[in-house]
Image 1: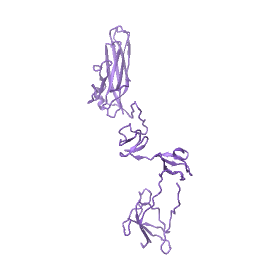
Image 2: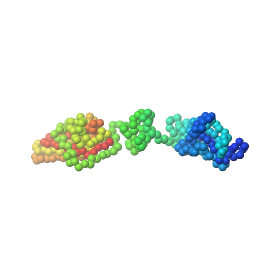
Image 3: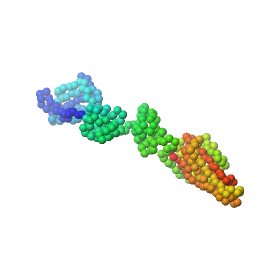
Image 4: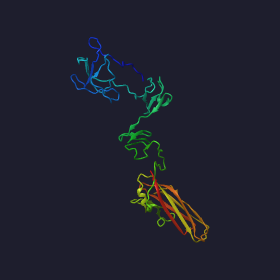
Length: 346
């Protein structure tokens, strides 16, 4: 911005014209007779108070003084407290804003900040910068952000950045009053992928690590019927089969990780081959997540067996419920299906 020179070291004199060496400058609450001292500061952020009154040096000069945006009474005396002058209602001038709206007639210097009509902030990278719109002049302006604290009363637009509970978040869906960290559809931390449609987005993976052998597997052979989905979930869910291992899965989980084992045996029949396949899906979902699909040969003259096992990550609903089924071909005589809970993602 354009600037005007102001004497940074003004000198104070007494009525007779001599230098007011070691004089005093008092700052009071406004009014003709007030003697209540009012705070003054040595920095523009008003964090470090100056001693009041301010003592002039031997040359009658005083240091930089910063004031609140309100009226003061200002009084100058000599070293013996004899008053030289007093202003009862002095109002400090407002400093020109570094973040004023861009003006096509203003010449900007390096590091001058402006706010453009697109609502964004820009910093000048060149001296003598005049008449160049910030949004179309990348050689003279660069866009910048200011990190603000999340406010539940404010509306946030796509890509706005806030800090909340010490964590920086980016807005991925415009919203008001949705707290960062509670819904990844609206806010994401740096490094997290943005939400996409028709997919499950996860941030962290947790594997079980316990020594309870009784929780190593869940045999659902007697419950699941061929080609029919069986719902599986934790205690208290609406699932047809309750798997207590899933009780440790939090409601924030997006998927569970399972090791799925299937096995078929055939003792009779003339089929040259037989097989069993398996599928998992989110409770009520449509997308299938294939499990093991072993195939057996031999015609059934002896006990022929087809077995397979693999790890499957399957989405769960808000009750941590998923569904599983198997499909058999070649008329096997016996089929078993076992689930091993491994962990979850959220």
